[in-house]
Amino acid sequence: MSFFSSVLKTDENTEQNCASWMDSPAWKRLLFLASKRAFPHSCAVVINEDLHMHAALAIVRVLLCENGSGDDECRACAAWSGERHPDLAYGGAPSKPPSIDDCREIIDAMAYRPVVSSRRVAVIFSADTMMLPAANSLLKLAEEPPEYVHMLFLLSDEKLFLPTLRSRSWTVSLPSPRSGTGIAPPQTEEEWIRWIEKNAKSEVDELVLLLAPWISYEVERGAYDKAASLERLRLLILTKRLSRTMVLDLIVLALKEGIVFEHSFGDLW
Image (cartoon, rainbow, N blue to C red; front, side, top):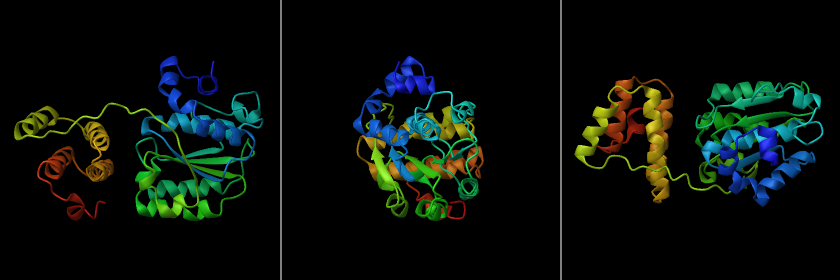
């Protein structure tokens, strides 16, 4: 059984999906530094979004373990409850970047001394898609963290990571296989009509999920500007300030008609 399986209690399929980065020198160095108390105070890990939680938990378990193994009988390891730990704070969730309020809670949490470990860790998900005010609020913590604090940023695209945060973080890119899940959005009038009819009664959360394979498709074909526009649209919908009908209309207007939605919805953005 591999380290990854033993620490995260994953099944065989999950471990196989993660094999490309588990065996990489960069990943092994991350775990080595974590186990030897030499891990940087601020670290950004670039990896596929669907692997953010897996990578975060594997690193954090080693960081918080008193013996650096990540899976023994020390009191820090015994304090885990699923994905939660008293010395761990999450900002956002995989595919959902933290808001500025979430970041403020992170800052407050990191001001306290560790509870059972010798360290405290803040995990920031989707750090490359954070709104600017949220990202800026973390600058001081990244610049002058308490000696017992580690910040772990998870991101899918280093190019979109705020430069001021990137400059204060040790950045590691882990190899990941292409998901192969890219799907082209509707192209013709007929395709759009069928798409609208099919999704007319979908909830907002379901409509958000439909954007992910479209973003992957644009990235796979090198249309990064189009992918970035789709990602901004996804983040806007995630604010949950638009009704189901408004979201459906916005998707059609932005993608089919080419409306620049940022100009019309700046107050929501």
